Amino acid sequence: MTAPPSTAGASFTIPTVTTDRLLLRAWDPDDIAPYSAMNADEETMSHNGGTFDTAGTWRLVSHLIGMWALRGYGMWAVELRATGEFIGRAGLYAAFEWPAVEAAWSIRRDLWGQGLATEAGTAAIAWGWSTLPDDHLISIIDPANLASQRVAEKLGFTVTGHGSVGPWKDQVLYRLDRSPAG
Image 1: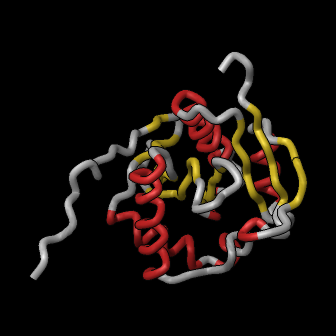
Image 2 (image 1 turned 45 degrees about the vertical axis):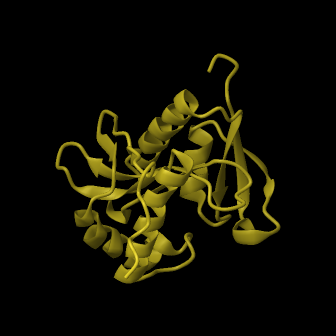
Image 3 (image 1 turned 30 degrees about the horizontal axis):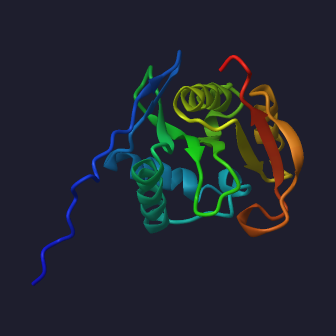
């Protein structure tokens, strides 16, 4: 029997970011059930490639946690500070060969329209500017997802075109440049 691979140097920390109403925090096993319910909702997932089951949610959460280890940034689990309940995900994302670091968000459908995605996105972007050297961020949004497009615009993103290849094919591409002051 061979020894497991060394974990030396594999340690990483997912920071916690607090806003007025939200906690952007590390993922927890207890997030799988409510996130699976979110990912099984057809309306919620209509702009995110379709629904998937608990096994798919588990793989996604593992991937999102791994982003922190590989890149030093990633997507947080989002919870309501007042209740401690899981309500979605938000953060910074850049999969293999992604065109730039993306700011992204997804909030539970029953909480849409309350500004929570904007609040989470604002916190993620502020953390990104304080941590990353990048001069801009992107957001890749389904053209039919008008609510997410409004969030991007409230956050200061502007349309730069439409994706033509890869996972961003047929998506609206947004860009947010770092301000000269920070």
